[in-house]
Length: 406
Figure 1 (cartoon, rainbow, N blue to C red):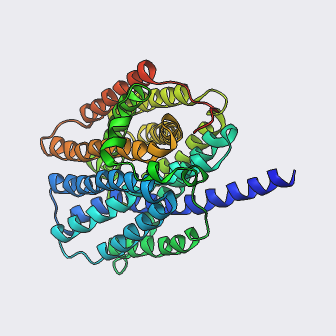
Figure 2 (cartoon, rainbow, N blue to C red; figure 1 turned 30 degrees about the horizontal axis):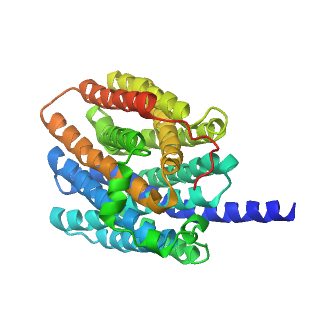
Figure 3 (cartoon, rainbow, N blue to C red; figure 1 turned 45 degrees about the horizontal axis):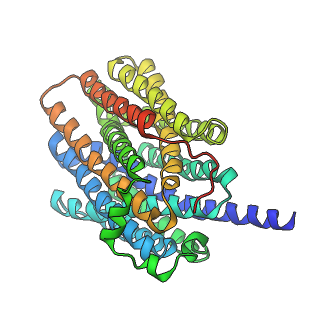
């Protein structure tokens, strides 16, 4: 009994510390969507320039996921965890002082590197540190901190960005400062036991060897499935969610109204995560992920077709519920596909491939909006991408529910 209690307390502490970092990362990404709408007014930016800001952020995330995934398999999950949060916090704070599009693009790249590196490393560390019977649920709960971060971002955007002496610059400073406190907390968590059990030969295995292993027979189908799913999900997520405030404005709502509606939609993310946390140890990773992506597909189509405030709120909330629930299942599912000496590399590379989708999604929306393409058509494109991800899961995915990881 004493050992179980100790393990429970340790798991809760790990979840809280990792989750608070995840929360502040989400605050930054969430604020970016609102800041884009504010910058369109303050700097008179074109839709294509707004898309470029989002895409540079995703380029940084792709680089960070790949580099720090490899680093975490070589030097440890905890070390990568701390470096990525430090990089993110400093760059996020400095971006509040950006004087134009060029300086903001440079800083968004480094913010993206920190954010892109931290998320797959965090999910790997937590996956390797908890018991198999609760592993999926804990990783989904870790991902649920993302929704809390988005809610804080929406609150800051709604109440503070419209205030002239605070604006989007003050919002970025507010986002960066608490993340430094999380950096302090992370020194108290241990590294993964699975990483500690690796031999020096396994830790120092070359990058090329690790990458080649991902495509060997035991992992080939999993790697192919993950790359397709991550690309399609991230492509659609960043294309849809970073543009939500701007889409609301295109449908006739002003800036403050748009922020208020997005705040309500964002609240639906939490029950999405919690429902997946409950289902994932009962139904399994593969089917929960596929079902929630199907819900995302239907909601995206209906949101794109909506014109009234009530229908936009309803289908926007359903889109948040299903899409973010799917993200939780995806983060739980991904680390379970690989063994310990290539796990962070595999997760990081899948996330990096996904971030490539995050580059094209916002850019595509920017150019399509500039070309006066109907919003319904744009959201239909994202629905098709989600459908491709569902097919990959069904035909290439395997169930990993409660299986020990080695």
